[in-house]
Image (cartoon, rainbow, N blue to C red; front, side):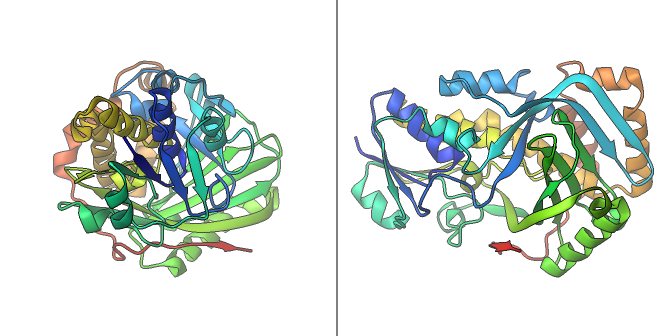
Length: 378
């Protein structure tokens, strides 16, 4: 049986590894010259976001992949800033950070290191239509920032949820490697957020992500206002930035004929925080299993898609509150008992809050639907 995979990112490599471990050797078509993201940055897998499927997501992913992923750091300190409140969550395992990029210890390169026999065809752009005629199955893993975003052409009920504009900086300063910082301030970041995750004690990734805006001009305004408000350039040196859009979508089915859509193409990008690494791995493994076991991919990922559904409701909640409400939420999280209940237990608080409050809030519409963009900036 012949299998083609379009895209050698986290999702595509996870599918390839699973196929290879079960006796198949897929052909992987990668349009870039190497396995790497467009830029080097730090991503985070947050335990709370995946409680629906596991209380220990990293162990769950390792078991699925039958390998051992090595995180950059264990995040056991989370600082949350709202406009007028701050909460500091210490002593609990919040999640794990990973490098995403060309480094030898990046998440992609770790998975790639276990792939031995599958063929990776670099700098190859092949159309889905051509490949599906030549192969028994095609796994589509081209991400949501490809210039030819294709899922909506083939998935009948594909609906875009939002477009978020992001600028990611690499900054030099002084950081605690096991500490992540998040800012939510409606006055300057609208319905977006800023997030910092360290590479090391001296280098960190700083994200500013804003959904529902008209374009890069509005993101730039939010970026400048945040840097001024927090005095970022007084504390750190800006080493470089990168811009990209994130497209979050939904589809009841992520299968078309002999094609299986995974990762961002399969609507597995979290619309609240833009998390995607864990669900990319899961969707890649499940697509491979569906081929190996000759079973329904849609059925295999049904439970995992509920994670995205919950996060979409959390996104709706955040979009519909004001700074005063968010200040109250953050101040409650500073309470030791509440901190323990939220972060120190296995209760799926996101699920229950979305079920309780989700029906009472409306979804905002992004003004720029289905526009993808990715370009480096100085």
